[in-house]
Image (cartoon, rainbow, N blue to C red; front, side, top):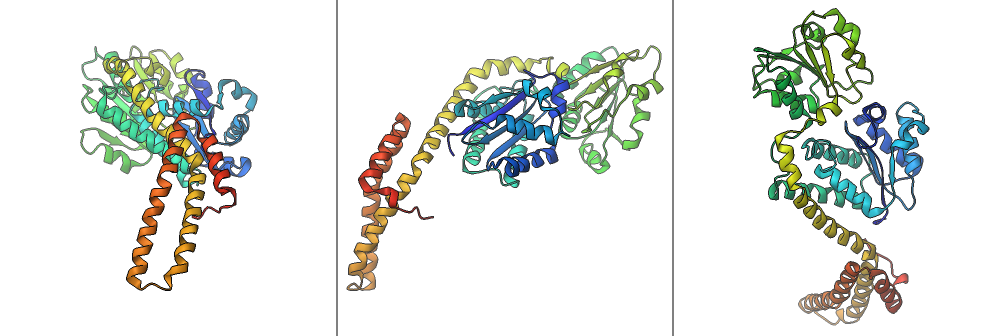
Length: 423
């Protein structure tokens, strides 16, 4: 199953945040979905990628199973009505297009902030979940490692990774612009997952007078705050500190909003502006908060729309990135085609090895140990030279798209259908 790669794709390009948050998967949900695909649909190879910008499932199958996969996703998300979500998904059943899309996602070409560094880590996590759940076969293993290697080439050979064009960096940049007239602005960061922790890292070089960190696991907050003068507070106290903060950043994984309008109302101060940055999907700040006087809320879509200087350098590097991706896809495509004919190569090797063993067995009893070892080595070397040309011709035929014809000739010529492949 080496040329049957497919995908179901929902991204910020086709779905607003209100839809994306409904199908967003955390780690446990993604792992359960993979098991659903294995148990209910009989899939043996799949990858579930879910970020604030996308929810996508890649899989290998002989036929299109896009609608069935979306249905399983809806079951995982508390029996979400399929008809509400289906129109936002693109079902990609073309092998090369699905492979190319995964390359582009993994490199960061499809991110809202082009070249976002976080996507690489998110892809590695998704791959790890597939491997842990027994849903990463030879094809997916090779594909993901090829993408990771291509990422290294992009980093080393282009300006595509220059600067800090990420959601968290864009958020901090916006905070600084919004509070420029405040001599001593304060920030409260609630939730220190991947994005929240990245915000804290970007805040270290900012102009904010005071930064408070609140996380359910206090030890994690203390570890993140170690090399800064940021103050760690108890998670239970975040409301009290919200009253003092000029900027509130929420990055909390929660199915329902953490910050409601009623909570904000309790700490409303006449004439004071408070900026809220919601970096969560699903959103952790209720939309009604923005209706409060003096309160302005920015969600991930708002933040991603603020390009920075690094973005222009990254955009200029896209042609080089696409060239590198094209080279990697070509090499990967050749490997894929070679895997299609590998059974023929193995059968031919097994047939010749069987002939070799049968022939030398007739003479071994008349040879001493030294002579037998020499004969063994000579015949093996002969075998390798005999098999070399058919293998090279098969691989060359793969690149020309003629492998199937040559494989049929070899099958007929040597009657390889009767040969058993040995592991």
